[in-house]
Length: 471
Ligand code: SF4
Image (cartoon, rainbow, N blue to C red; front, side):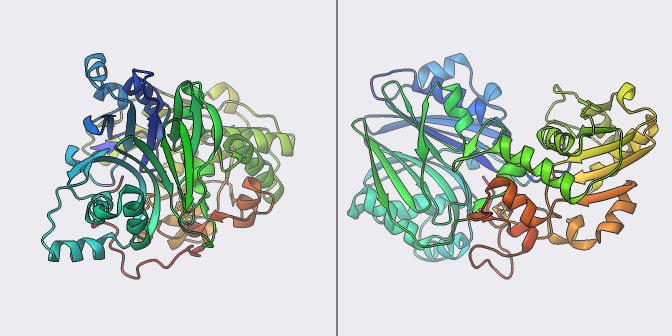
């Protein structure tokens, strides 16, 4: 099966949501709408767990949110606290057992846990636990978290979570429900986003603020790096369990993963993308007649490029929004068809023109060549590709599915080689400095390791990242 949803893009691995609103009712339905807003973060499985007086029921399945939950299923999920999850998996073997929320029962009670991120020392911890006779049921690293929490049960849930966090390394935005609490945590570097909103009768935790808007929730604040927030009895308490680590919110959230209507750590994704387009026009100007985007993720940056360069913006590629997520594709011919099925050229805006084509990123380089070819076949006299991020050269260990380095075209080819390969008349990438400044004036507090190799923490020399299914 071949995934046609995102053409040659890195894949986000999940989105989480949690709602604490006892007495309000229909929380699973709210979580369902919230997960819809986070669907772009993971399209392979979806799940919702509800907590009623400490007793947890859940439903999770493979598929999109609207495919997984019928009205009947949602109506049967009743509770005062809910946790939801959407997941993208890196392998074809994305079994439902690896879907989240992860619900476990142990001596201290039941917990439901939803995790976005990737633990880099989960393999070692799991080995230790297995040596001690612990049995694991899934191949996701989040089960390590659940097991450690259960192990520290005698300390009470908050202390047990803190002791667990002291042991794990990596990236996480976690939403957990236990007893009468909804608990949210963000890793000490703040790699993955998590924010808090206020709704009638309670609070919401969400990977992105766009889900708060859907739920008509008022944005309260982001969870800080190394912070645990505990929501119970209508109040939020905060424990700063870690601090002093280098702040490193994933810059790729701004390039591609997050929705443009989200605000992450105070930075608007829309504004940062427009800034990136403007910056790109300054760094790589070109004489041309029209600026077009690879929709949708390149659109905002293309508007920025057009504004700065004074070259008019036009629609040049039309996206078919109704292509299924996967379809059977037996050979190379069909692979090429998949690009045309997804994107079609608007000849009227292209013919006889010098085109600036804006894309958010190039991963393998496979799609870009086909798009350039389509534009030239439609009569473009020149195609100048401008990319709103630097070349992706290094693997991500923090929850984003990056191909092996040997398949990253930015790691294996020079820019001129890539240009030749994709057949563009010129090629320009945004600089790392330009990208970081387009997000935050100071350019600080962001991870850019997949571009620079400068990881915010020590990463394994030999990658064990495929030991676990991603989420
Ligand atoms: Fe994001 Fe890249 Fe850092 Fe991974 S390595 S967290 S994709 S910026």
